[in-house]
Amino acid sequence: MLKKSNRNLILYLDTSEKEAIVAIYEGKDLVIEQKWMAHRELSTTLSIKYEEILKKAKISGEELSGIVAFLGPGSFTGLRIGISFANGLAYALEKPIYGTKEKGKIEYRNPKKILVPEYGAPPKITKAKK
Image (tube, rainbow, N blue to C red; front, side, top):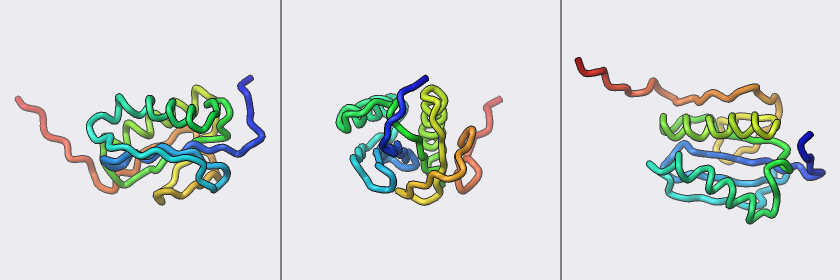
């Protein structure tokens, strides 16, 4: 069984724009936040920033009470990367996962089994060349 903290520590992720956000909240109070210009490097920087913020907050992933991710709208690829990361992390740590449609809103009622991005518009996908 994974370690459980007495504190209500929530990981918050927002990867909907070029500037990504990883934060730790205690309940609804911000403990620590890290923003960076991830843009096209999000897939290589997100896990590094996650590890960095845990280290700065002096906690382990096992001490988290849950994960909240911004669902969108926003960057198609950014949302896919961030929400996939959140889903995988929640699964690996056996933590509940929650989605929010308001930036910075820490909502942790009605946990989901898996989050799905809400892009706000159909993705613009180019047709395959013949």
